[in-house]
Length: 176
Image 1 (cartoon, one colour):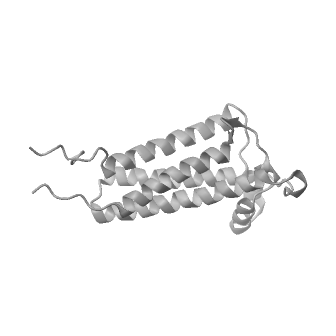
Image 2 (cartoon, one colour; image 1 turned 30 degrees about the horizontal axis):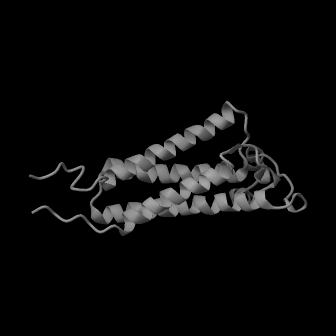
Image 3 (tube, rainbow, N blue to C red; image 1 turned 180 degrees about the vertical axis):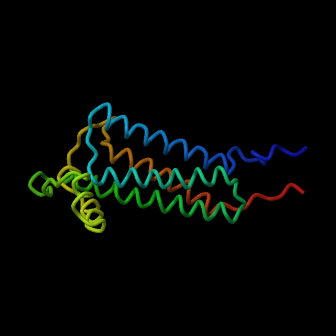
C-alpha cells in the first residue's frame, strides 16, 4: 500500500517544510510589527534589514510551498532560502557585535531610516544600515536573556539549516 503523497514515508515532506518556514517567518514579522506599533520599540537600520531577510526567506518559502517543486527545484529553493537566512544571520551577528561593544566604542546614533531614505541615495542608506548606528547597539528588550537580534540570529540559523537540508537532501526514492 502506498502512503499519501504528502508523506512518502517521511515525517516531513519538502512542501510541508517550506510551509512551516513561511509560517514561522510570517509570525516573526508579525511580532516585529507588534513590537514596533504596540510596544513602541523603534527599529534601527539593522532591524529593518533583518526584517527584509525574513521577508525574503518567507517569500521563497511561500513560492516553494505553492509550487510544490520536484527534486531539482527544491534544491534551488533551498539554496535561496539558505542565502536569505545566511544574510539575515550576518546582519543579526553585526548587531549583536555592536551590542557587545563598550559604551565608549559604540558608533554615534544616526538619523532615522525614514530621513535617510528621503535625503540619501540608496547605496548610502544601505551602507549606513549595514554598518549600524548607535541605535543598533541599544538593547531595548530581552526575553530569556537574549536581545531581539539574538532571537533573530537563532531563527536565522534554524531557517538556514532547513534551507541547506532541503538543498542537500537526497531525492526521495520512487515507490515503484
